[in-house]
Length: 136
Image (cartoon, rainbow, N blue to C red; front, side):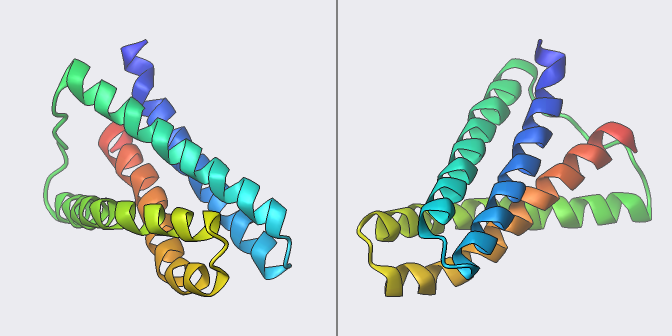
């Protein structure tokens, strides 16, 4: 079971991105309820990701990238940006959720324009880091 956690982690990141994209499309089409459902689904996926990631880390510890040279530099650059932005995005997501729940559409839209691209980047780079760590 533990050996399948990396696959689950990557799938949850990818699914979060899909829900983010669908939520963005829904709000562009002024489909408020669909937007809400997609964004809450993205939050659920990202939350499950965090539980799975922390579980894997607690059970198996650190996993080092074995690549060398330029690919190692690329990996570490992606990983570092992913980690920094993953920390940054948490309060942004929480604030976006709060503003959406309060139906403060002006403030929600303002913070959403910042939150969405960061969250999408974190989701996509999470999958890239998984792929590089496990298949390069």
